[in-house]
Image (cartoon, rainbow, N blue to C red; front, side, top):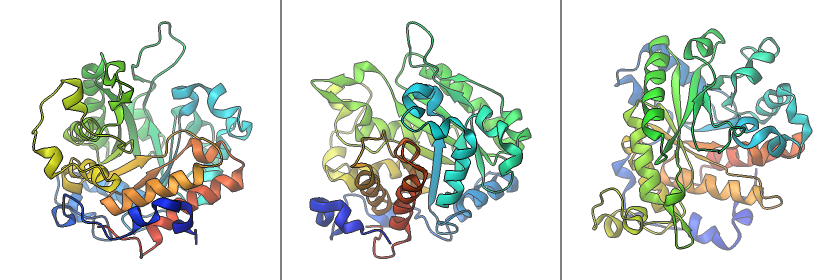
Length: 349
């Protein structure tokens, strides 16, 4: 097992020690073996629930209530040049699937093209999530705008267990994206597929006085709340790293007492507030791993996993930190994340 305490270094006591969050775990629907009851009490069809069970029931974290997903759509989102030239192995989509299978992931999330070109090689070996929209980078001027790259029906025809989509909340076109994705999720549910929403906050106006409030607790949590409103079954969000977005940007509405009572400065408190906005944990929150920064990647993902788990989240979705390394190093990094969720000593606080 991974030496988690050593990787956390000086933060080990802060993140693993005794801590009382501002919002009690008794307020949450907690991940675990019985989590799926949350959806069995919902309007989700039996086919949707079965596909969710596929995701939660596969890989090293099977039936623990936690997820470990490998997402590889960065060739569009960040350009193939920036994403794959660091490790050209992953220009071949077959290696994306090999990495996810070897690492024991719950699922692989990728594009129509990548999943389609190797479908007969890996059919039924691992659940597949088709990412149906992306932000392409060739248009000038570049704008943060997600566009559909295929249909929900095609994802269903390909045997996907779920569809994934992104909304750039706060962008000039966020309203249009919200409508498009809500309609896509309705169709996905009607066909029996689960839905996953990348709830990203995106607008240069959210950067002020040297602080990027795109990752503020209150803004990311409101994005999460909008995501569950359009019936996302799983929410992907960046880990919050600052507070006071509404207050400092002068947007939205806020309860001035909320920051003192419910939104603390501790990393677990900030993530806990994201979980609360996922209908108090009835919908699972998975945090993203972020870009690869080199030698510190392993420590960073373990830190993020500890925060997510202790806050009541459902796991991590990590791509670049894994696939921009040699295959075996990527496997080891993903399994180190999984070790956090398998470690019974690391508990929800």
